[in-house]
Length: 310
Image 1 (tube, rainbow, N blue to C red):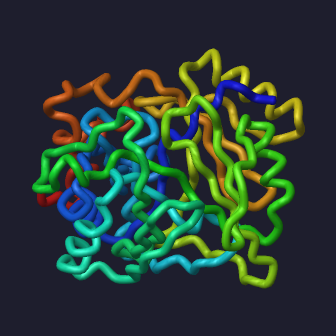
Image 2 (tube, rainbow, N blue to C red; image 1 turned 30 degrees about the vertical axis):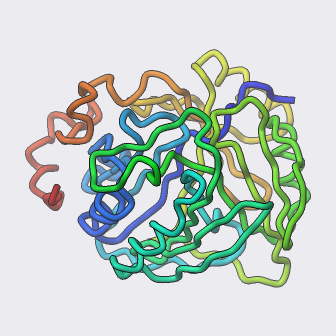
């Protein structure tokens, strides 16, 4: 069994409009934009990172805004809901704030004894706020959201799958333990993790397959401390039969990727070196940072990227 996984590192999704995406996460949800860079494979597209003050692993939501990309179709084989943690008693504030901002798809519910507020992002993204203990985490307070109700980071994620067995076995191999069942969901939690430590699986055998587009999660990343731990995880996965990519330098972390039996793309990312490797903490997310191989094309890239308001 793999013992190096610490919980979630980040979740990466796709969007249509970059400014709409930026405004939603920074002004409505009150997260900090901790990095403004570009897609490694499509430098004409932003890669925007939102999180807490320093982009702590387990707090970072990232997006590729592909311009006029059509919306994705919800279904099986995807991360259907990305869940953010908020302090106990915060949901009333968020219900009022999201309603005032015109956010759609809001619904209150309880699962595994936790109060939650589901809502949709600008492209129909599936989100939820879950009331839970802070566990040492503090929200970014750069917006007008009081600290006592601010988003702490991730709570976890919900997978929608045709058949859950193989993915449950994989999660167990990755160090997650089954923690219970409730309302058609099976919960897995990793002990001693970084607080973004929960995965729920919803088996929907009769549902149609998801189709990726704006509002879809592209991949979900799990955290390991460093490159040595990552190499151990990579070898363990390959020994079990998974096809895992070589280690890829993503500037702010190193990454490996593999496709799960349920169709979800997993990444394992290092906590090092972090988002302050090329910007000081006070100025994170302000300047356009480019991968080294694209720096020579900066002027052309800046010409095609839309200017972000704020």
